[in-house]
Amino acid sequence: MTFKQYKNIKEFYNDTYNILMKQEAQNLIPLGNIIIGNEGKDKTGWRDPINWFMATVSDYTGILLTAIMTPPHNLTLYATDNHINDEALKCLIKNLIENNISIPGVMSDNILAESFAKRYTSKKSMKYRINRHQRIYELEKINPDIKSFGKVRLAKESDMSFLPYWSGGFTNECLGTTLSIQQEAECCRYHISSGKLYILEDNGTSVSMAKINREMQTVCGVSYVYTPPYFRKKGYATSVVAAVNKIILEKGFKKCVLYTDLENPTSNSIYQKIGYKPICDSLEIRFE
Image (cartoon, rainbow, N blue to C red; front, side):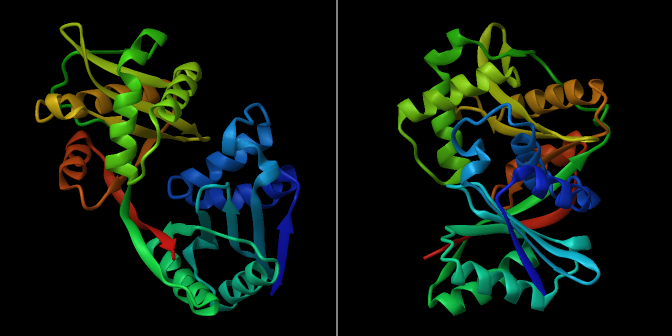
């Protein structure tokens, strides 16, 4: 086995892009990251590849395992063609430890993530816990029977009166973390400047939001879906996601992709009614 750590994002991009594209929807996050890094247009926060960990493990047949970490986020793994090679995992873990690479956790398809976590924590005399059970969905056509209402518009600076609080609710409920209002405000201004955050209005009242992110060759991600508690159970989340999906498909993308928390049956039900179909399960694992 050959372990290779990269310092140059363009070299890593050239070596791994086509491999990750074999499962474009599944690899939405690592693909999005290497595209951002390769373009070099946005180096805000974690997006600067100077701080990234990028590596591959190969044998005579080619790359077997791709690893990328954009601190402070978790290590993301992909086993080529979803074929897990135990020797490749051992090689990656050995080099992570020998090079003193600190990782907070791992995210990947559930089998690979747990296989890595068991081996890694055993070698490090650590414990691990599953932080989130996730399911990745993709959509090609919107269910024509979906009844949407209200209208969507791009988020704007005047929405900052409420957006940091919505963002805080999303961060806490969906990601299990807490940021200060100042940090949430910074995130919101970034999303507004990207021109990809949409607000659903009903009779002039802002009631829900969703964001387009990670535009790939044929698929595009949907994230940041949030409805404040007062406006829930009124179909707003369905409406805003359906509207954003329509925008994505009209741009020429073939599929929309999103992640859901399997412990939230409401959101999983909503997305399937819109037309989303599950493609694989994913785990986010934290190390302690």
